[in-house]
Length: 396
Image 1 (cartoon, rainbow, N blue to C red):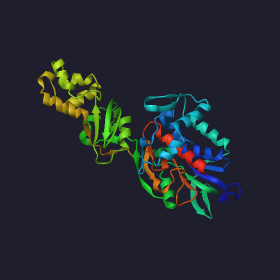
Image 2 (cartoon, helix red, strand yellow):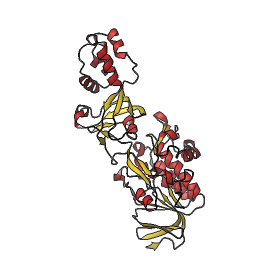
Image 3 (tube, helix red, strand yellow):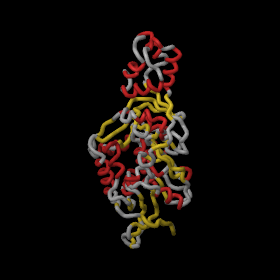
Image 4 (spheres, helix red, strand yellow):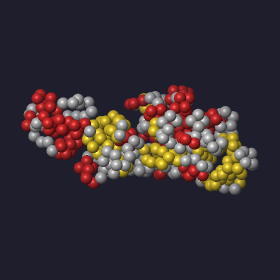
């Protein structure tokens, strides 16, 4: 292996030129640190470019620690409190990038996600970060207080090594479990990774709902103690849409997911309608608040036909109860191929919440999606990337 720029070591080598890696390298570089940023992909920020439908949902103004899943619910608090959405927004605006807020605090570029990547690359340039893309990583070791990384036909050494290679979600973008293998090599534990923010699949007995592929409606989806009110989408394989993606991060195999159809209807609404409009049908009532195809299927599943006036209050109360907590028993998810992020990852028990440095391996840092911190849908994972990257970049 040919040493890069002779034998002089870098202050840090950052592995992974995604959101966390770019921002960490820029932060350290602008503090005068000599930083090498490596990525096996041909270009930096590939997942940033496809995020938010190409407009990059770059943060969420409602960011709070309780919007994150981790084996240690308190771990994310320190980094998130020291680098807030307003801090990133300030940088975005300094670059003249126009943005807008969608529902639930989600911020998007008016233009393109390419603006965010260009901004991060300019921030790296300001810090004289050396960026090398398109080179496969080889051996990585540690000796005499220095980390050595082989890549392509070259090698480099540094006092610090930052793992920012993400998780295995969206493998077609080049994502792998590399971060976990490297962490284990240095003695760090890994919380079992699993797909998160991912569509759920339904078994064959739910085939009737597959006929609804493409139909969407607002629901409250629940699994365990978690509940999300957003749209649910029926697919040819099962359930998707924002509410389902959110609940998937909390769902475990064998758990039931319940959906509350017509979430604004109060208790007794069907019995009230029976008295107000006895000649109307349940199908007619449901189709006033739901897509017609969905109303048809729900009526068929409920087994209630005819006029409301001909139905007993007990039958209508039972229909209300089922519509309020309609059970689905998924048989799985669509896996890492369709997962927006990975839950689990490098165990936070081995990391400093203030610096993201490994407690027992000086100079080794882990940030972003590689770590066992997973945010809700809607810009939370980007904010974790910025916050954890900033924490590490300031500590290198």
